Structures are given as structure tokens and as C-alpha cells.
Length: 603
Picture 1 (cartoon, rainbow, N blue to C red):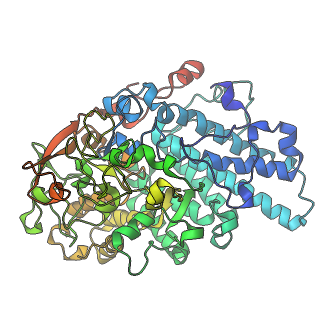
Picture 2 (picture 1 turned 180 degrees about the vertical axis):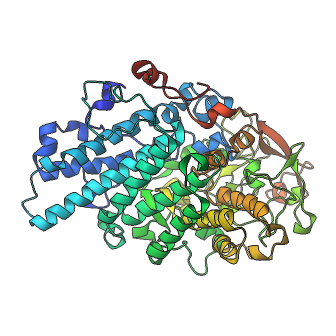
Picture 3 (picture 1 turned 45 degrees about the vertical axis):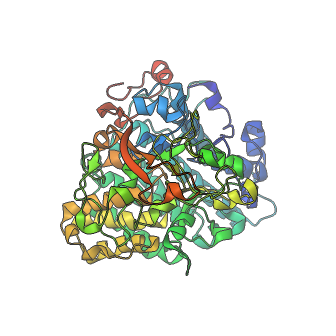
């Protein structure tokens, strides 16, 4: 590993437009690469700076991979950029391409750098003098909390590595910074040794000494790791370990995963809830669940997040429609659009596969006639989360001077699909989720928070629903958990009333679909399809899009948006490549050459 990785944890720059906020004193920090070892351990204040710098290692998902999102390497989206990011790496099966380096190689480098920082805190804290402004009891309590946070961080970093590379060497000591960090560690642990015996055990042992909810979720400490964070992450990990890909190796059962989610609800659920304001449409509540903050927006849904400063137009322009003056960016697929139910809770299509997606026949799903769905009005009467996530033709949005009526127009030659613009959407859609509307006010002069949510309460509910269905089959509890999520979004029907969801397999497919639409663009889909053992099916299928064409020659302001005046045609937007070896990333070649570490199968 490069010596730069061994340095005293230089601050990681996470996302091209994002920087860590300083909402509380705990985030006031000096870049830790400016601290010598004597300074780091010389007094408590410097040591706090060193530790708090670890929060910079929490990554923001927006634009992280060459200005693209990880979900654009799934069936949910395609980036409009043709010269980098996921489009020239993951999507064509080139896992050594430079366009994917931020995800493929920098993950290895930055996570091990963060792990080394955590190891320095855990093993070196006893060298640091007490804070003379505090009592001995207060000093000891601070130290316990700091060590617990470092252990939780270390567990999270190893989890991020495990998802991408599989079990990797567990390093708990601070190795010589002049040497390659993992050289002595060439034996790879088993899944159980890596995840169950180490990662889950770290979280379990760290939780009691981490900040309780009452201390962590205040404005001066917002973003701080907490007891609920440790339990929520354990819930996610146990769900994964109970899933088809890992269960035989981990020994974790679906009932274990259900119990983990239930324990969070029982012990911490009183402090968290789905974000919901009265007299506000469900889609708006859903949109705000990932935009509002706990400390300024009364958002009690977010459990674990990266705490960033406010952003302006520059923070969202790369993912905004070209008719808004943006660069297209992360463009949702028709595959994703097809996963949304109708507003009354019925299914628009007749059959779904184990990835949660409709079954396609010659590029088109078979319609469920009872739902009232038809392709000519495919966005009408749908789950409100659709328009909270996806900008479609005719949708009123933004503050554009190019299209004064502020409606998305993807007819060729019009504002959002102009001739000769290489960044026009390849799928016929643009992204609405994670784009704060406040920024668009005053001709793009506004600002807003766009924190990166790692875990929110909706996940705990869906973890419980999935695990309970797998352990025991359909039940009133599972239906209620799903209805909580769907009713918050504005869907009117009840899951229990659907005759097509009364057996375990059908409900399994439904839950997988539900997770996909609820967590679109939150970096769940890449790992969900892997743990379900359906990644080849999900990630090698074509990315579908649409072409919208004008019927007739009228050009008045409203003509292009009147049903019957435009035609929607499905198309293949992009072919994808994904095979079995791509379940895991290749370990960076340089590390394999230097250390002799065994690479992943097929690489």
C-alpha cells in the first residue's frame, strides 16, 4: 500500500461539491496530516482533533464516482456522461477503468487509512494526558466514548470493504507507516470471522459506551456516532448475513435478523419515526426524509448520516436537467419507473421476478388490467414516490429561463433534449430525489442541506418486514410494517388486502421491489441484489428508457403536455455487462503484487 496511505490520516475529500459541516464543536478540526505523533498524543485537545477528523471518512454518495452515482451502475439509472464514471467502467464490465477509480481503488485506500486512524485512537489513547478542565470521572467517560466511536468507525469501514472485496485481513494494531500496511496480513478470514466474530462483535461491545440518543442528537453534536447508530448498523449487517449469499457461511438466521430489527424498534423506536408532516403530500414527506435535518428540519427519521454544510446551485447542477441549465447527470431508468405501484396500492404489472422488477417480455412488462395502468399515461395515478424521485416529461419543476412554463420537456429539440447536447438524458428522465427545491429559487440563488443519509428508520422497518417474512411467512405484522412505509408516501391501499401477496414467495418479491423504490439512489440496490444472489439477473439486463415524440405540428406552450399530443415509446437505453465474478470487486492490482494477498475469484 502506498506510503500516503500510512500517513497520519489525511482528510479525505468526499464528493466534488461536499465538505463536512461544523455544526458543533466536535467537528472543529485541524487536518490530521498536519499533526506530528507528539502533537497527536501531546494533549487532549489535539487528540480530539485527530479523532474527530475520522468523520471526514464518511463518504457522500452524490457524484462520488467520476461525477456519477453508484446506483447508475445498477438497473436504476444511467449517467448522462459518456466520458467517465460508471458508464466507462462498471457498465461495460471494465473494473480496472480509471472512470471507476473513486469506487474501485480509492475505497481500498481510504478505508484502510481510516482503519489505521481508528487503531491509533484505540491503542494510543492511554498516552494522552487528561483534560485539565474536567474531573477524572469526566475524563474517563470521554475516553470510553472515544474508544467506542473508534471501534464503531472501524467496524463500519471494514463493512464497507467487505461488501466490495469480501473478507479481508483484520488489522487491529498500528503498523509501521514506513512499510506497506497489510504486508504481514496475507491470510483472508472467513465470512464468519470477518463479519460475525469481528464487525458485529465490535458494534455490540462499542454500543454501551457510545453517546446515548439524548446526547448525540442535539445541534452541537449533530452527526455524531451514537448508540442507535451501532444497533441500526448491526440490524443491516444481520439482515445481509441471513440472506441467501451469506447465510450458510455466517450462521445468522432470518429470525436473528428479525430480532435485531425488533430490538432497535423496542429500545430506540420511541426516538425515531418516519418523517411526516400533517397537511403535506406523501411524496413531499418522502422527499424531505432525506433532505431535512434533525436539528433544523425536525427530521427524526435519520439515524446515521454524513453531516455536511449547505450547498448551492453548484452542488446540484451536475445532476439537474439540461433545460434547467444543468448537466443531466444521474438519469433514472424506465426499469425503476416500472417498479412503482399505482397510487391505490395495486400493481401495474402482472409478474415480478426475484430482483423486485417486473418481468419483461421483449422489453415490456405484462400489464395488470385491473390496475388501470397503460403506457400512454404511464406516470398517472402512480405511487407518489415516483414523482418525488423521477422527473418525467410534463412534470412542473425548477426555475428555468429556457422553459418558462417550468415543465420538463424531453421531446427532441426541446429544452430538456436539445439537439447536439451530449448531456441530455439517455433514458428520457432526470433525477428529482436529493435535489433540494430551495436551491432553484431566485434563479438558482438558494441554498439547502443535502446530507448523505446512511441509515434511516424506514430501513429498520423494511429490515424487520423482510426478515420476518423469510422466517415466518406473511403476517399482520409484516403487512403493517409495509403499510407504514407506503402510507407515509401517500399510497392509499393496504398490503393485506392484496390477494396476490398472501404467500411467502410473492411477498418476498414485493418486499424486494419495495426496498428498491424506497431507497432509490441511496446505495442499497448494488448490495441488495448481491445478497439476494440475483445480481447477474439485475445488473446484466438492459437499461430501458423512453423516447417522447410529438404527435402533430402545433407548437403552443401547452401542446407538448396534453395527453394524445405526444407519444411514449420504450427503448433500450444501454446494454449492460455483469457476470459472476463481479459480485466482488478486484482487489487493486498494486496491492496484490506488493502483498501477495489472494485476489477475488475471476480477477
